[in-house]
Length: 463
Ligand SMILES: Nc1ncnc2c1ncn2[C@@H]1O[C@H](COP(=O)(O)OP(=O)(O)OP(=O)(O)O)[C@@H](O)[C@H]1O
Image (cartoon, rainbow, N blue to C red; front, side, top):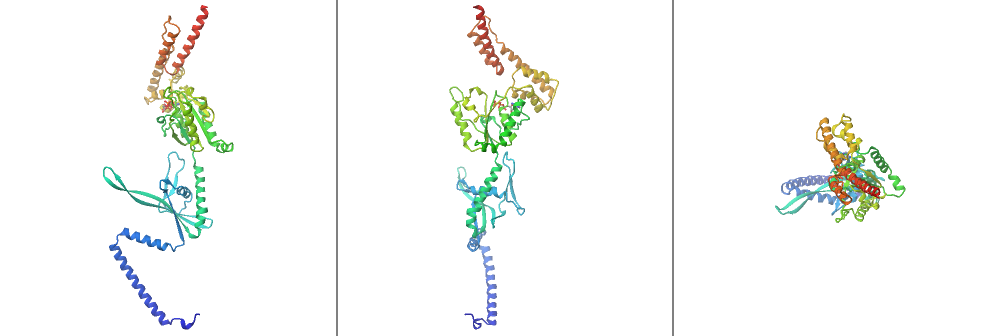
């Protein structure tokens, strides 16, 4: 029971207060002394450790709980760290003073994340949560063969998520799954289609500046390809509705130097998407240098199925006729694009690219020559690059085309001894064929056919 008699007298309260005040002063003085001695004799690093331990001890009495989300766990990435990083980029408030900004090659948008030491306060179903990015430096000792042991520092990042202890279960079971879900949705909206090229590894410069505007190719075909790409990119929903994977395959075929690699780069630049070059390993049969069907099918189907949806795969070949129809069927190669020798309209594009001219008195002559000989855009580009002076460059091109025409005519009219017939004629043609390329080869083949017909009709006449 509480009674007045048990209450301390005023004098005893005052004396207790005086004693307490004196003791407090004494304690403060002692603490100051201890602080001074500590500063003098205990190194700063040790002081930091002691104070963090004490903080940890008293932290136990705090009502806050902190989850540490490390960037990686051993050798594997911590998915919840990545999710948090993406999620927090959408939770940036004006109170944040420092942000990290980066842009991956070919990414359309910048990625913004909080910088170390910065805090983001988030709310979720009545809870208040504080995120902080913390970086710690770890010392690692490694062995160097030249200079012996050396120490290196590695930065280790983690998110510290603090909230009231009362919400531990809710944070673990509801909030973090929500963060993961949100980040998945953010990733989905950022997702870019990937373009895979199956051209030779060194054929594609992943940062090639080629665009559809600078590409000399049949304008109708160019437009058809652009329309096809547009349709494909827009039809993501459609593909999922009809239960088809959102993928498209293009086969570019034509002689070397007609712009197949440039077209792949133009496609990637047009869609503003990543281009990945894959080499087609195991597709060739060493004995006959033909592309083996099973090797290619495995490669193409493996690529299709390897990493999910949203991709364009471009296959290039100089010899479409050597590919098996199984490889060319829709579903593997949906659109076949023939990259042909240069046409007069293609020449105009090159002239504009290289000389910045849309017309010139020599254009007619050049266009006539282009119709007569098979010349690749790469060859013409090479000639146009020889001078910045349009007159000089175009004159050089005319000489080059005339030289080609002469060569073609030689190939078209192989020296055939009138007396020689049958196999000998063919052998002679074939010998000439070796000096000829492209159209010349085709012409020789035509010639061979004609000769066979001629010989046949000759035979008929004799009968
Ligand atoms: N159609 C074209 N339009 C514009 N430039 C072209 C075209 N074709 C070739 N070129 C020029 O020639 C160079 C070589 O062409 P490219 O490598 O694209 O040809 P390719 O058909 O892929 O040849 P290959 O079959 O040997 O790989 C290009 O970098 C470009 O400068």
